[in-house]
Length: 453
Ligand SMILES: [Zn+2]
Image (cartoon, rainbow, N blue to C red; front, side, top):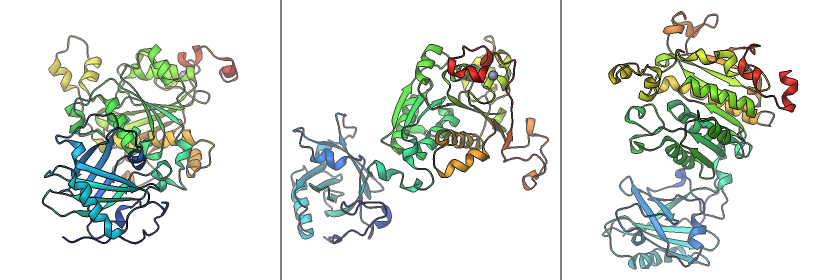
């Protein structure tokens, strides 16, 4: 059995304390197996002798080259095999000498029943040093594995340092209403940027036709979009707080309760009524709101930013009740059914559902993300500060292809800046409509009197 010598000393890793043996992938040398601990407090949980037998979830990937390990905390084991029988561990005051590690691990694993599945011995010191040995198969040799630990909070966003400090965003609360192809992209990008609090609103489930455009995959089929996106956010940032609301935003009383206290609202819903309702509530609550939508067949799209005390509202731009015939992308059966009269048959309704590529939706989502970050960081010290000057307009337009309202754009205009072109953002200044019923008729609170007067 070829044993792999332990390194005497771990080399310093950028941003990582050397007193604890964290590894990063580029350090994983000589083809060692990798064991990943999927909890930031994994060693604390192991060391906590609360009298309960620890249970583990163990999943092997890539022909047992990579093993994911979690301690199950009050959860049911998900695996077919008995998870307790896969992991042995022992806490030491100080880690044993390198030459003793394999022997100790071997005796830990010998107490587990022989299984033809990976078995793992974890040796841990009181000051958090860890060694892990792995037997991929019952008949195979015991190997010392490299360890990847889920970092503690302050390490998670090390790649954003200097551009966008995650501490700026960890207390910001973002509501995303509508978790379709566009909304789900926005949620994931904001989680990657370090937004710490999410309010996710949708009442749909993941259906087959969603899969090719959505962040979610086939393994999510049938699940509520809110729950899937919550799991996706926590997979990016386990420290995030995620509220889920499986409700129709058109129930205004619910909606008011849900949206109150949010720092920004992103409306990525697929119907005009919901946007009008969100508009009314956001002005009443004084919350900046971004609206993104794609045109028919996602030939292009637009983004509107409404800052309640500064500029036009959604109704100022789009009018109000007469908006049912607005030209916008129709992507779900429910949306198509709502847009057609009741006597229209299902087949005809299906024929009104349009196609649109994920890559045509992404630019719109991306602009929503940029504007959201600008609003969330407004006035704060970050590299995004300069964008406050560049992104001042309330309305932005984008064309993916020269068709429909974009048909007149010049061919090859992409290379020229003196004419409208595809794949370029156009900011448009829009004014408040003095006849707008929404921002005019609202009950005006005292602090807003100056603005509405
Ligand atoms: Zn208005």
